[in-house]
Image (tube, rainbow, N blue to C red):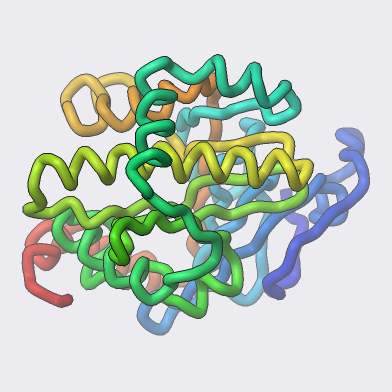
Length: 288
């Protein structure tokens, strides 16, 4: 696959793919290109795309959770799974398909006065997300891959939960005409009382339910919970199994997906290697 795409950040919609012809971006159903600068490197993360293809003008291209597995020259392919809800189903069916306890928590969140906001509190969520990454040791060192407020406003849809005047946390989604996918989720759970932690769990479920309704009202067809863990990775990590259980409690179907990665810059590949080697130590450094 030697097709080239422009490095402009935009959504594309196109014709049905003809498998007898070389794949080009104009034959893809849709995609969302998110540009992020890591140090001096311009990277492109491509979502909602069926196949990977080469992109000009960037140090690295990452095609996130493609639906099809293909041989793509120069790309590394990672086999993954995600949890998906079919939003073309009746809303009552979707609600009844959620596990009873999760439905109870959603109703309790409403009764207890938790309020969900759309595309507000960007600064508050950014700070919560930064702390969440730092404490959990997630992502790149020094939080270099955490979406900035500007990036969130440009590309994403933000749902936040507020209780008693405090923003508890939120979920950041990416969407196009047919898909919505969890991008980042963060709640300020560090060293909080059990009651508040429980409140955050209810708030998180309410956010997902509001996001499902939001997407369905827009005519979006697929709700993607942003990946789940399988195999030894899940078996050896209690936290990951809990996250899986949480996502699947919404009645989501587990489906295979594929991540394709390609680096065009030797310097970027070196930086990646250093992050892998030094990351676990450097993440312990206080950078907030």
